[in-house]
Length: 460
Length: 113
Image (cartoon, rainbow over all chains, first blue to last red; front, side):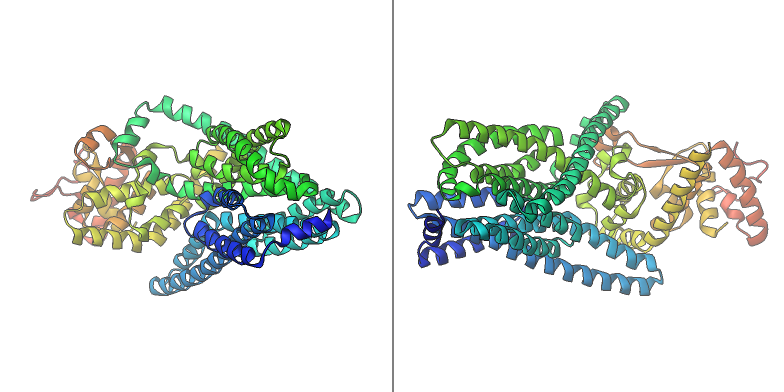
């Protein structure tokens, strides 16, 4: 089996080079244009290569190349992000020196941290996890012993790269755990399986925690929506009539969701795939293309729809499809086996729902981190449906995230009402400058008032 | 109390029975819009001022976002008059209690109820 694997994986040199190059380019394009279709496109690449009659080695190289491309692009994006953070910090320092107010400087750094979380963690996490899985698969194709080494080393390397790219060490550590779990499952005994079990338990605990947070977030969101509807039956009219495209108003959240969705979906795909099907990897990759596409599309679509409903965001569902596809492709080993197709479909549904709920939990956590205490949870109050943050000056949008509770939304809504009613462009620019100059004072006053109000509420 | 706060209170006192939105307060007080908001925020916190968001439908009909209207509360009205009277005695800001166009504005005691 090992020899056959080696031979198959070897493929032709031209196939490797072409496949790898295509994969790298595809991965770069994927990451460069947003990670939403990353896993899906990777799977499609495999399908095309397979239909073209190439051997497993070429297919594997294409897949690996795509993933390496994602990794590289994630890394590059992460480096660019770090550079951007540094430049923004410098800008913040300059601004702070100009206004003699340290909070301006701090706010820039905080802003960039939120940006990193929103835009880069998804790509970095996804790249890291996929990297671990791919290294594991590659190792498994060569030799059973190398499976473990490949899985662990690949996972560590991938997670480190992912952490750097995503700017989040904690996430990277989580992925190292995922790789260990994969290695432990593959071996079935020995010290690595013990480590895998322990780390897997930790990871499982974290996942369950996020899952619970997601479920709670779903119910909270549903209750909040019902409350808003009961409070104001105009809400939907307001949304549609205030010339605020819903897609724009939620654009930031979508990016955040999609990034996390693809990352989390990939985690599941990778862990499940490396755990279940390495034994039948060769046939799994070939036959799994058919089974994965059929089962994954059916199960993934159904699952992602359910997950989207649960998460309230259809775009997230699209991201989940990618993860499900990877999972099913890797876990299926016989295209003619109806049982595997059924299992793939059911697994897709399960993963879709699970990932959808997980995304909600992660998004809730990120929202709380980036929006201030209770910010997004309470954003549904009066001004939210009136606010088109997309048309607000960028030099003012950052202030919103630094204000407590729903004050940021209210402030930006009021700012927009000023700017829209400004008689001319000169006055409008003057207003913008005025709001920008007053931002430090506004932040200070807002927090003082917010904390005072909280204290008063507790005392009463 | 800062001159800015006194200016905002003076603007709100000029039409105590009328709600004013931000730009009207800006024009009446002569302050910059960025300065107005934190002041109104503090006044809301102390209960001197109430705020209300305009109904979105008429605003949309006029092709603009809803405005946020402010108005002095009963307590805020009384305290504003008292505060501005003290400020006037100290710094000559009597015009803040005087409606525009009025040669001699009402005294704080005879001010708008």
